[in-house]
Length: 461
Image 1 (cartoon, rainbow, N blue to C red):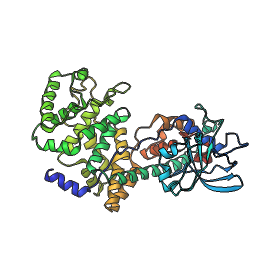
Image 2: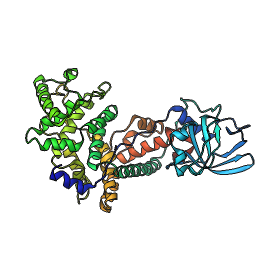
Image 3: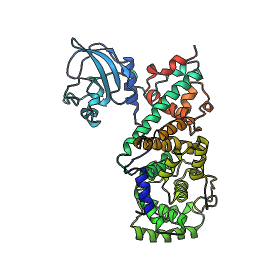
Image 4: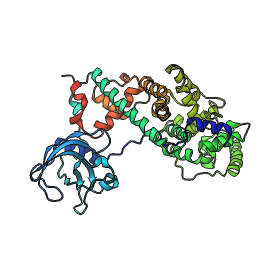
């Protein structure tokens, strides 16, 4: 490790990080409907019994828990002749209680009922403190229908002020969760590798996200900087040969994407030398996806963009450069201009790049993607570093800037929700509102929890 690297690691923290972008929880349609089924009591109420054979009556389904822990809180049930008030956890199958390790988590100690679609009478459900939890199998749920409509489709519309208030609230919840996740991760992995891997993941877009994360693991930032430090010239070409070579784009299978065969041969030659010198091999497990994406979103474009970002930041490390910005007195406009210069503006070979000369690109990434990088990586990262280092200024600036940056990409699911509410998508003028809409969808629309929808109080009567 060179002196510059050591100084940066000491300045940033001796800690680690995993991925920046939170993974979207996967709910199959039955799981979504089970939440709604439980909430609306849309299952036979007569002669209910637990899987253990006890009589049970559901007096109150409880409230949807939006924090960590069981799915519903403050439920009230009657088992035989005894009342119980507490939490309810819902799964498709009984075994999921143990698969999700709820039996090891004290947060689930207040669970009074385990609701499932498929029960195992031989499986005893217990909490971390040793209590037994009765299981109720829901039969003949009316709402186990994948095509069930949303209640908001019957509304006349929603008041914008009310919607904006709700979205801002959920945007803050979402941002804080991201920040805390990064803070937790930074206790395990090198912060520069975390930042670099998160950047790679964002540049991979949805179709190639996993491949980009694997590429960042295969070529860790410390190794890349060591290679650049050992080569005084042609650093951009060295980076391209290193990344395209490791990704497998220098073999004949991808020659159709290259307009200049001599350039490809030159990269191959450098790649062969680098692979021998630094013991790097082509990873044949990569699965790159081109179909269904615009050319500027192809992985060849995104790798070239990542290369340029690293090239411009070397010999300084990306994460430390960003922390320096957030610790300065620069305004939001000045900070955004800085991000544009490093993450968006190309340098050297770009518009006439041989790997995409058939579809030239003007910028490394578009404006919407830049705003998403700020929201999902840059500001949560600086908040987490500020929190760990007890730098209140960095935390405050990260939070306030995240509320004000321009709009990013609006997912099709958000556009559909806005259409149901008769709200034009142009109304979401900041990324903060878009993030709030994404969080709102996850908590209510994705789970079909129309009965709990906080927007109902803002509906035009």
